[in-house]
Amino acid sequence: MEIISDIKEMQKRSYGLREKGHRIGFVPTMGFLHRGHSSLMEKAREENDALVVSIFVNPTQFGPGEDYEAYPRDVEKDQALCQKVGTDLLFSPSPSGMYPSGFGTAVSVSGITEGLCGASRPGHFDGVCTVVAKLLNIVCPHRAYFGLKDYQQFQVVRRMARDLDIDTEIVGLPTVREPDGLAMSSRNAYLTPGERKAALTLFQALQWARKMVEGGILEAGTIEERVREMILSTNGASIDYVSVVDAEELSPVKIIRDRALLALAVRLGKARLIDNIILEAGNRQSNG
Ligand code: AMP
Image 1 (cartoon, helix red, strand yellow):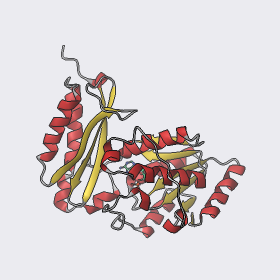
Image 2 (cartoon, helix red, strand yellow):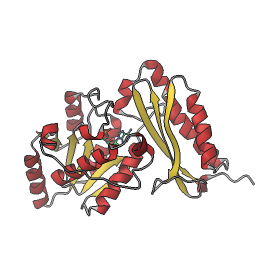
Image 3 (cartoon, helix red, strand yellow):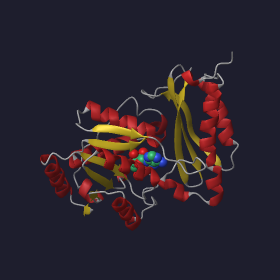
């Protein structure tokens, strides 16, 4: 595995791989890697000739007062994990390399960025889209892999790639969970033991919502309300949002007709955790 921090060097290496006819799989990350990340890396390894992983804690996707400075970092452990899954090139640029003085461009996707995390973190998706557009231009991958834990991010990046004719297939892969169901996240490191127990409420609320739909409750408002009540009954938890939206457009729905997404963001101590589930009306159990 080679570690590259220079942007031009990374681009040169990608062009070289492409000239040789190698297919490049790419996994962008912010580091502090866990099994959620390695699931993307393993799939990318399997489906492509070369695996490029990036580690870059992108300052522009953090709002004022958010956790950019505190974001957990462990370079050595990350490098070991990248090596273990067979990464060819680990791209790890510096903030000043990515955003030199005079940098003045932002990529902004409208519509699907308005709700959910877009509403509670203004400017977040502009930061995400701008950095992902840059990374795709630098790494020139045939495929880029994203986790569905960040479902809105996946849809936004896919929309951006489509709208800008970026010649990279955007692949979304399922959420990897701890044995008890908590979605793996670098931010779980912020949780105290008590908060870690309480954090299970996110997964439990999602499972409960799925059962409601199976039982024939299809009104989004009812599901949202019951999920909110359940989360608020958990010690120390406060709600950022609980929303049932169309699974493609991410616009609010009143009744679940086909596929809907239940997405939630919950604060527990220093952590803001997100999770989601697809609710399918077709899965409801027949009562007759
Ligand atoms: P991050 O380092 O948090 O920016 O995440 C990098 C990529 O890993 C994103 O595409 C995330 O959606 C994905 N990811 C993070 N956590 C998980 C998880 N638990 N399961 C699957 N993918 C994940």
